[in-house]
Length: 499
Image (tube, rainbow, N blue to C red; front, side):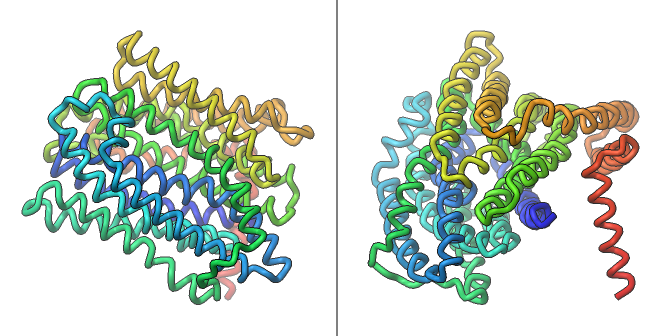
């Protein structure tokens, strides 16, 4: 159960980070609403923030962890760590500088629809400054990979929360006086704080890397694995760029609606599936039982993501209204963003399982299969997103639904490629049917409560009630993992009481 323990640690830290992230986004919505400033900021921040996701949650972690774990066993981790850190920092700095220099061309590529719109120049101006965040986020991502290998998950996962906290303070204190400049300085100062937050844990653990220009043999192996790994995760991150690219041709505000809804959608996705995927990668890299670990990880993410899917769809309007519905964020904005959130939620379970299955291939050193799955996902998202948004004229709702459709297709491909009978359709059915029926009953209760408690504030009561109903339903259905978790929790409490 160490896999779940590490995942819960990561997930708890990520949950706290997401809460601070909500505060950040709520402040942006309050002070700037849905406007040219928000569209410009979200486009300008897209590239550096995506690089942060790519390095922190994906490609670098997947390539680095197995090699570093191998070197720890061989007693030569310091040589590898210093060499890897030196070249990683130099490449990170180079990418940052290139982003600043070529900001205008990059903005034209990712959002061509705004080229002739009034806020294009503002977008480019912001992008030049915001690219400096990439350097600090890159350092934080390197420290995350090092600490994760050593079984430390909370601190690096919470580093993003430090960024959100600092950003929020800067915007709250300076937006009245400095307008959109507060967004720029919030990102830069938040990035510095994010990188520095990891240093005490790295230092105490004796993991502080030095500088070495000697090209360690395992750094060459890292590069060999990192390139296809980054391509794989990079292709997966193209999802955000496709949405931005297509939304730039839609009416003003479409990019902001996608951002606000996606941020809420990322809460359950980041807190559960990313934590479990990183924990699973670490476990499999250390040689733990493959079949047991995969089944446990898949069951756990289904157990959490399935009710979250139903809940997000049923409560999307109330959630958006409660979180963003004030200041310059209008009732029309609430309604549009809630539809987008519901469309994203459709794909939550598939996104979660996709991350788990990708970790299985990366742990085996197979980077090609996740790359192919990512390419398939991107192509299907572009196809279905365009079809829903422009042919069916569903607009920004269609773009989000296209993203969910692509998650189903990508997961299906990875599932069919798993070898050795590790997980079969029958296994998936056995994992799904009890959480599904528990979620249906939970949804019925939510529907009744929503009829009686109509104000958005009541979701603060409806959501915990729904969670209790769901897990009681699982216990009634004698779900094995739920019973095990309850038993472990009971034993832990008894030990604490006795001590």
